[in-house]
Structure formats: structure tokens, C-alpha cells
Image (tube, rainbow, N blue to C red):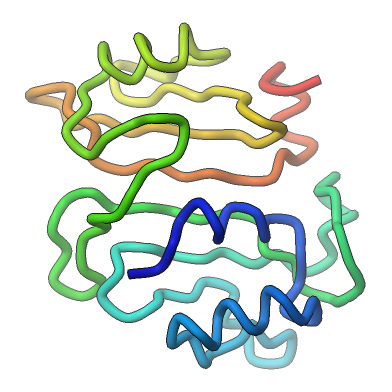
Length: 160
């Protein structure tokens, strides 16, 4: 199981950063984003995770932490069963757990910087944008992503 806490530390880096490249190899991720052929979304096999890479990060106001052309910008965690990509079942950051509902997330993290409709809360945590998506029926946590802030997030007032 890929260590999400460790993976989050690599947000803002490119695969040219050797420790990140080593982490991906160690976790069975052989595919890399490619400017020529696209492929900016990578799904590590049956982990419930999706890794999103952004070319020209500076153009979008994303802080780039090392050299390289394609920056690791966001990780998405699917908490519901998905036939193609699996379900994330590892440890969550910020003392959250897989069974939390919206009230539990808000109790743990406080009120969100932004709440979209009835199904999404966005927080600015540890210099990152964390978005939590809930199911309609039970307001159960179904998916979340953690991303490097970009210009759009700044314009929406999500980060300083």
C-alpha cells in the first residue's frame, strides 16, 4: 500500500527529483508523465489513488520545488469501490479516518474555507488545498484530493 503521508510530501516536485522517482518505483509506479504523449494522470494499480501532473506549473501559479517540466500537483483518493482503479484503504492525513462523514471532517479540521453545494468542502491545510467530496445520501466521505494551490485557488480566496 502506497504511503499517502509520504506521497503528499512530494507535491510540487517533478519525477526528475530522485527521491520522488525512487518512491514511485518502490511503489510499483513505472509510468511517468510525458509532454509529447500526454498522460498527466497516473493511476497506480488498484490503489484508489490518482496522481495528477501539470506541465508548465509556473504558468498556473503552482509553486515548483525542483527542476523538471511536469510537476506533481494533486493526488486524488477514492474511498468508494472502483472496479478499474480500486479503493484507497490506507491511513489518511490530519487524523482523519475512512469512515468519517462531513461533521466528522469538520470537527477534526474546523470549518472549510469554501463549501461548494452540499457535497464539497475545501480547506487550506499545511500549505495545500484539501477538497473533500461527500455522497449525497449519507454525507459520507467518498473522495478527497490534496493539491498544490494555484492561481484559481488564490482568486477563490482558498489560500493566502
